[in-house]
Length: 238
Image 1 (tube, rainbow, N blue to C red):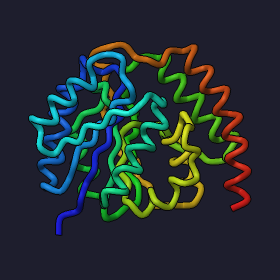
Image 2 (image 1 turned 90 degrees about the vertical axis):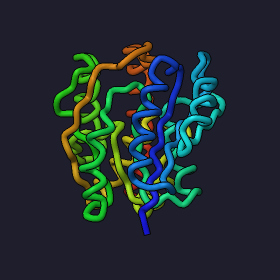
Image 3 (image 1 turned 120 degrees about the vertical axis):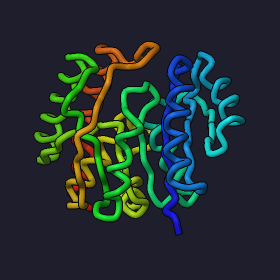
Image 4 (image 1 turned 45 degrees about the horizontal axis):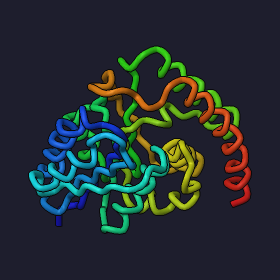
């Protein structure tokens, strides 16, 4: 019996990228098997992302397009995970809708799925700008200070997880937490799950404008540090 893969992609104001991203990742789920699905969640976009996705859904048989009210990237990532689990996915893969990751690099992850609970892309050669690299380095330092864990790349939007490990830890992440993938990564490492990091290509955004600027990142970061401390106490008490 073929393993059922659900690829989940949050999307916000990505009408410039969404056609190419959807078609490229749809080819992946088609290659894996007919029960696998590509799930793209339109997070209340103000552009034509939702309209384009509705048209693509008619063209791509294994695409599921969902439109919901805006709740932010972290909450939308969790929404996708919950949806995939509820639909009986055996493996859940998450990436983003800006075209920075390469679908062809997914297959080495899939080949190793039986050997690891979680496989994460390591953005060791990044082309998305020095400011984004700086933010990742700061996040790595904060996680080391708060959780006392050294994590190679905690927030990469290129991750494959089996359903058992995701079900085990998804409830530990607050529903509206901006950095939901980071908190899941902390849990995977803190509780000694079998995690593998594989280097991936990380290109510049392929079109459109990034909705997260340095001002927003700083605001999210300050709040995240406060939340990290609270969550860390809860994790230590469990």
